[in-house]
Each structure stands twice: as C-alpha cells, then as structure tokens.
Length: 302
Image 1 (tube, rainbow, N blue to C red):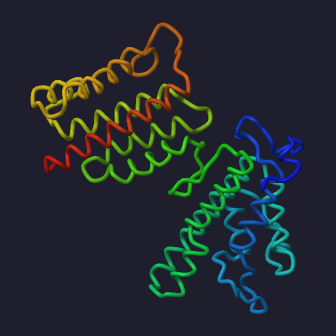
Image 2 (cartoon, helix red, strand yellow; image 1 turned 45 degrees about the horizontal axis):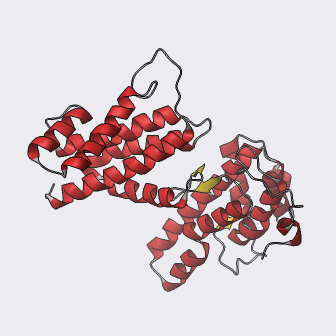
Image 3 (cartoon, rainbow, N blue to C red; image 1 turned 120 degrees about the vertical axis):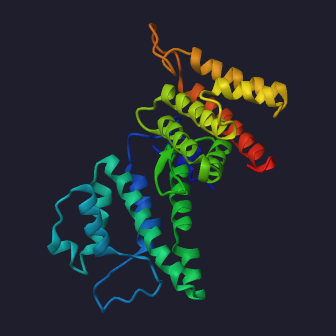
C-alpha cells in the first residue's frame, strides 16, 4: 500500500512526468538497499563468508566501475574489507545522474557474466542461485524500483537501459528481436536502430520511422529477392497474390507515408513535423507487419 506521503501528494517522488535526466536520491538509496546489497559480498577476505551466495564481490565491482567510468579509485578504502561497502555506496550515491545509470548497467553485465558461469556448472545449487541472483531477478527488481519511483528507464533483456515503452510495445520489441534471425539479421539491425532512435536522448522520431520502414523493406526483399525497394516488394506481393490485397495496401500506405513525410526518408525544404507519438505508432505498426511477414515466410517454407 502507498505511504501516507504518496497517497496525499506530499512525497517529492509524486511526479506527473517520468524522470529521465535525473537520478533522485531516494532511487539511489532504494537501489543500494533493495538490490545492490543483496547482490554483493566482501571478496578477497577469508574472514567474510558469502553465506547467501551473492554473485558480485564488492572490491572487484568497485574496480570494474572505476575502469568503466574512468574514475580514480581510492584503493586504501576500496580494498579495505571494513570500508569497501561504504565506498561502493558512495559511488552510487555521489555519481552524476547519468553515471548512476551507467552503474546499473555495469552491475547487470557483471551479473550476466556470473550467471553464465553458474549455468556451465549444471548443478541444482547453481540453478537455485540463478533463480535468486540471476540476471532476470536483477532486471525485475531494477524495473520494479524504477516503476515505483516513476523513472522513465527500463532495463531490457540485453542489460541496457532504454526509455520506458507501453507494455504491449515493450513485449513486441522483445519478441521481434528474437524472431529476426538468420537471413533476417539485416532487418534485425534496422529494427534495433528504430528502437534505439525512439528511446535514446535526444529522441529522434524521424530516424526511428526510417529504420522501422527499412526493417520491413529488408524482410520483404528476403521474401521477394527480385525487389530493390519496399515499393517493389508490394508489387511482387500483388503479382504473386501472396497476401490479402487490403493488407498489402496497409504496407503500401505505410511506405508511402514514410516517403512523403518531410525529413523521414528524403530531404525536405520544410521543417519536420514528426513527433514522438508518430514514431511509437510506427514502431507498433512496423513490429506487427514484421511478425506477419515472418509468419508468412514460415508458412511458405522460406
């Protein structure tokens, strides 16, 4: 249940807009107490037993953060078993807002590395550790914390922080990235760029739309190798009577929109009028069209 201060709007965490270019102190403290502490232990000291089986040694993690963030480390404190945890907490609490998110990603990568090692052991004990301290557990806890604090970033299945999307689109993004493999790998790269342009700062909706259309075009050219553009793909679809005519028209009109909209696929003498909502809609539509075409390729035994 929400606290008194949250219920009645006194808590500074109650913000109408998602937090993007900030890392509030309460989020940092929550990350330390709820996530970082359980996932770490004092390493390189026989006096400290890692009873819980936590995946990350504090001293090694400090070293990794220092290297990744190009920060000078006070090794007299960072390597001291009595002080290393406080030192790590200081890095999290005192770093620049964007470095805090760097640290969240660094920890994600380290957790994934340990999990890969555990998986190679193929033992029931390590299976339990993966459930408790694996990457998906870390990811879920980070995203729950960020959702509670209205942070507009989410940790994806690759361990990267991306801008929060509506849940249906987020699920579709993950599914598409898994389905676009093998001969569709070029399309997958276009798709990744479309997602990246839509959720990085500054957001670039024009390039996001361009890349999602290119992803569809790439899939279409695999299915119809004689084609050189998405327009040609549409013609081949109609000639082969491969898909329902009205659905082919949807693809045609989507391509026509991208070609006609200033600053998307062609240079224009007028300013762009594309907004973020346009890019998100095109990602929804583009993801659906890609899944439809991939399913068609499976049906025809491509």
